[in-house]
Every structure is written in C-alpha cells, then in structure tokens.
Image 1 (cartoon, rainbow, N blue to C red):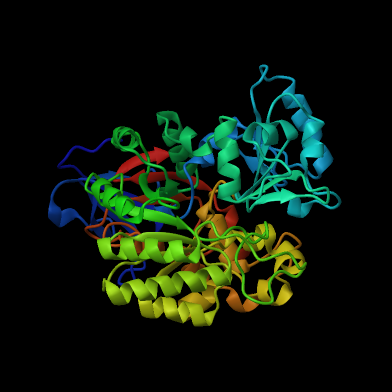
Image 2: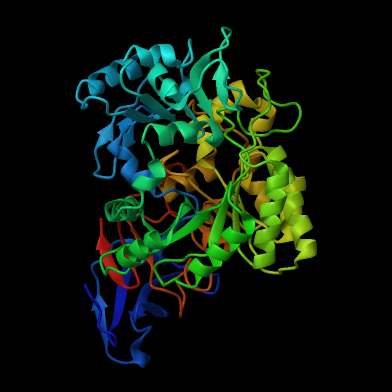
Length: 546
C-alpha cells in the first residue's frame, strides 16, 4: 500500500509495543507522510482529519522496527561462495545449508565443488569454525588434497583468519623466508597455510583476485542485504567497515532511494591503515550526502582480532591454552592517532574491541582525545566489547562512550570460550550487558552478520537467556530482562547511531518504522523469544510483507 502525501492511515494491531514509557502499549498507530501522527486507540487521529483504517495486522503485534547495529553488507552476497561452517544456516533465499561436522566433511565437499569450477578460478569458502573440530587444525596439507593447481582459500567464520593451499601461498610469495605477523609457520619453518588478521590475509586475497568487500558494492548486493534484514524485522542496519569511494556512495544513494528498498542503511567508513586527517575529511564529506534512508559520516576502526581465533588482545592471564597474546590490526600508537583525528574533526567512531587489553587502550585513546578536543555528544561506540568489566564500563559512562555487545557469542561460542580460550571464570562475565546497563552505559547488541546470522530477536534471546549450545546458562548474573533486550535492539541501538530522535520507539513525530510479529515478546516465555515469527516490516509507512 502506497500512501499519498496527505493520507492518514491508522494501523490496528492486537498489541503495539511502543518502547515509549509514556504509553508502553497501544492498539492503533496513525501514519502520515511516513511519520507517526498519533498513537492510542481507534480514534487516535480523528482530530487530524479524515483517516483510513488498515486492519490487516489486527491479529499481529507491532513494535518499533528492529535495528542491527553491527553487521556487514556481505551477509547476503557471501553466499555466492561455498559455505563451510559448523552450524546449519539459512541463505538469503530461505534455503537451509547443512553444517559441516568435521574437517573431513569440509574437504570432501570442497573436492566436489572444485570439479565444477573453470580452470584457474580460485575455490573460495567461508564460515569455517575449527574451534569445534577435534584433531588436526586445517592446513595447506588438507587444501592441497583438493587442488594444487588453483588457489583454495577458506575464510574462517570470524573473518579474522583463513586457511589456504600451497598454490595460494606461492601466488602471494609467502614462504620460509617470510617474516610477517599472522603468517603462521610449522615446525619445519614453512607456512602452514593459516593466515591470521588483515595484514597477512589482504595481500593474498588481492593476489588471488578475492575481495569480499568489493562484492558488496553492486546493486544486487545492496538489495540482497536489505532482504536479509527485512525477513528478520530489521528496518535499520549498519554496514560496519564500508570501503567507500564516490561512485560507491552514488550507487548507495540510487538503490536506497528506490521506493521498494525496505531499510535505512548506515554504513561506517573503514579507516584502518589510512591517513587519519584525510579519512576524517572524507567521512564528513560523505555525511553531507546523507538522506533519510542512507546515513553516512561515521567510521570504523579495527584494533585487535578474534577471541575464538586467539588473535584478540587480552590482559593477564591470557589464553588458557598458553597461546601468545593476539594481534594488533592497528598498533596502539595508530589507534591514538586515528582517535585523536576523528575526535578533533567531530566524526563518530565505531571501534572494534574484542579483548580487554584492546578496550583499555581504546578507552585511554578516547580519554586523551576528549581532553584535547572536547565533544559532549560524540557517542563513540566500542563494538563487541566482549571482555569488558565494570571498571571499563564505568569509564565508558564517564566518557559518554556507548557499547555494542556481541550477545550471540554466548550461544555460538560460550562453551568453547569456557573450555578453550579464556576459561570458565571470565567466560561467565563475557558480553556483560547487565554490567553495562547497571553502570549507566548506553548499550545495544548485535549479530556481526555474517559471522553469526542476522536476527535481532535471536540476539535478544541470547542476552536474556545466556544459553550455550550445550544447554548451560553461562553467567546468570549477566542476564537481562526481555524489555531490556528489546530496548537494546530498538531505542538503545538508535541512540548509538544518533538516530533516537527519529527511530527506535513508536511515538508521535518519529518515522513510521515497525516490525510485524506473530506474537508479543513480552507475553511469551523468555526461552521462546527467538521463535517469534516475523511477518513483515513497515518502513516510513510502506508495508513490506515477509
């Protein structure tokens, strides 16, 4: 249904969860010009003129459109490559792909795929999760069994590590003489085929003609990502670490302006390894091009790596297996320089911080920059914030820094973190949303899709229940209420994006962005939160059915 400029449409629902404490629930919401005109009962907009009643959602539940504050555009287009993950996953077209239970299955399936490829083309997979496998770790030996004549490249699920075959190593020039951090070597002094973090991975990807992020710059990739979001009730989503040039921004403006485009897109310009002053200037230039469906102007910094890949920077006592501390994607000196430049220019930062050492360095950089360049409402965001404790959350509060917590990790990796990475004690306080909220920090939660599937109701379920794959509750003290979790995926997320005056709650004056649900999240058992059907979305008053 398309609305004309003056039409007032009143949507009826079984229940409307507004996330507005002044009117927590309602049964009707009136929409005009893409905005919320009134909220209440059937007559809520009668005083504004002639209304049209729309009762198609009379048996459903409306709530503010869900917000995904940390995901990546490649969550859709990545399915063009072979899925090598441990978990069953659904692709953007709704097809379920069976997970790979062991390394032997991964290799066998890759052999089948290899036979279908043209000569010389790289074989690319993604989603591998070796932390779930016992026995040998993936190496060039396994991938050489698939092919020695074409590059074989398998990106791990965390997108911080990859496994490659000998041909790929040869193409990039990695050998026993290579002395580069992240190029893992075996006892014989030659590369094993495992590459860790960006400085080691990116040269190989370029040499082999593989660029996951470049793929996201097509119109098809943008639309596919939007469909992934729409199916899960998301009306606003980020693309954190967008490598943008002028033609990319023009393409984003074109696609997001289409009436059928179902989300508001918030890309963050990737700036790791760039000139700080030039990147700040570019971010501000793009910010001026923002529209109601495309919000530009923030940046993304990468500090450390991945906890389950043992590349995150963690404080003492480190990793329980004695692995060396992780890898800096930006050195502490580079972090300080970039943070100072962005703070001085007035550019909001999304800063990847997995380990507690990384978050400590980042908070110190922000504190120093804030003293030099005061900015009261910056709302910089520590992304992931997985090992932060009360001391760091309180420093966030004092600095006005937000956090976006990776709640999905509890389900997907909680058991592994307790047993294999940081130990049971610290795993119980990982992804500590309860501590963040109690410390007075503005917080949201996320999927980091495609690392884990994009689905905010599932992410909320993770924060509420903190259940691992084994069925264990990991860190009962860090559980939050259903309402707190819903706030985190609506108004809490909107605040971190500087969009809380526009979206995140259903109240007069805000944009008419809603999720259409099959049940009331506040009425079902908290363990059933992830199972609530998403039936559609409404963006600016336009209905997009699932």
